Image (cartoon, rainbow, N blue to C red; front, side):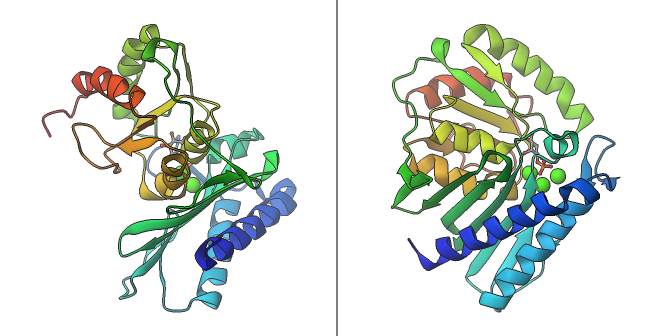
Length: 262
Ligand code: IPD
Ligand code: CA
Ligand code: CA
Ligand code: CA
């Protein structure tokens, strides 16, 4: 295990434990962000503060990009990418699928990723070139699944305008696949793919902090991760599946993409 991965895992576990301990008293405090459906709780903020403190105590010069705190300018080649709670709406409703996600990027490449799912007692980890793991067990995504038999995870983000289009895309995808899942956490969706619990994942409008750690877990499990039309994964579009299914799902999604000429 790399030093980066060990530190990221320690911090993600500590943040998860803190959230579980404080959840009964603090989770009711909420504010909204980009839209009325885009909520942030006091524990999203507290989790990110704890994570930032721990990273900077161990590695004072590193840069940090976090969903709630943004990014301060810096010179370091090392950047930590933090989603303090991925799946805030699940968290708010007491559903178990929310996660603390921490990735470490060196010179723009993610080299280590941790997704801690405290209410399931599951910690997904990956180091570049060293595989993806859940509780020490090596993960391998499902392979050889045709589109018609694929269980496909997706998400909708918070933009009201975009959601109407995303509804149309789902309506076109649903008759072509085994079924759709909307779990409520991008990071857990991608880790579920790595663990063979779903076959594919796509979403428009996710952010770096949503997919940085889980993207490495997925690719280290054998999945392909990218955008549409040969582009890399980005906040524009994230598509993930084993090779073969990736291309089949891509060819279904690309013509449905409202921003195909952008
Ligand atoms: C959200 C979750 C959700 C996805 C949204 C994300 P948050 O993150 O990952 O599954 O559909 O696009 O913004 O706000 O819960 O950290
Ligand atoms: Ca959020
Ligand atoms: Ca998120
Ligand atoms: Ca979040």
